[in-house]
Length: 342
Image 1 (cartoon, one colour):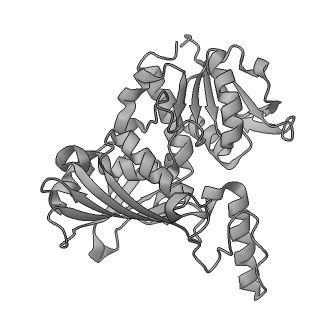
Image 2 (cartoon, rainbow, N blue to C red):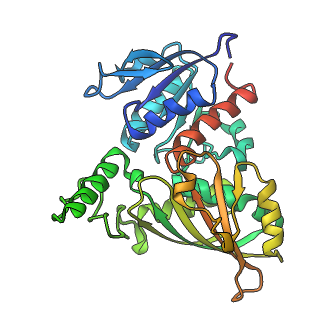
């Protein structure tokens, strides 16, 4: 890193995650010498504010990556497959938020609290940011896995509308407004069905064996991040009428004994985790508590009496922050700390 800071390019700057990345960079005081904002030709010329200054959005072009140290990218996978290698070949490290590179064996898939050591393997200079629902789950499970080794996970997610970006939030808002007025909700633009007053179990593209692509991401990414291909994972992902904050009901079977009390203590000491587990006082993780926060909240920690070594957990996090933007900036901070951004 130069003494004056890092030269940064933010790709997909006008999207919901791009907007959150701008906010998180400022909040965390990431050392920036120069920053530019890149997007599609459609968004080129639009003005964005950052740190009290206005910047014109530039179109994605190869020359835009000249003299750039770090690229934070949040684009569709097809765009990423084309442009992330171009940025890396220009000499930048690329932290990519799309699904394009996550399962590439030569690309680290990183959650800093869990597997920051894999950044040393970023020989292609591309680092993948995991799926939002995977990130919060592995942050909660890593200390427990280290202690008792996970055999099997059954997970059900309750995912916020903002997982579909700004269009998802627009869908939910307009549908809620129509219901309040007593009118039929407008047809959804982003979600697979009406979300207001409903839950949608098919809000992702269908993959193999009747599982959605989102569910397969959770299976494959969790194994890669935890470095254990033997873990059995059975997911069900559902969209719920919440603006921000994914919730997860996680049932875990371990290879070794672990009590709820041991789990609470391990999680209290874990980086990036807040334990909220007082049922009688209603102090439990909920999306309204997690929104705007970078931590992963864990509660409802209790024994599963149906297996020898089982626990149930309730895990909540802000999907736009820890599930996307904050995790990406934390990866950049780790690159700096490890002397890789020079």
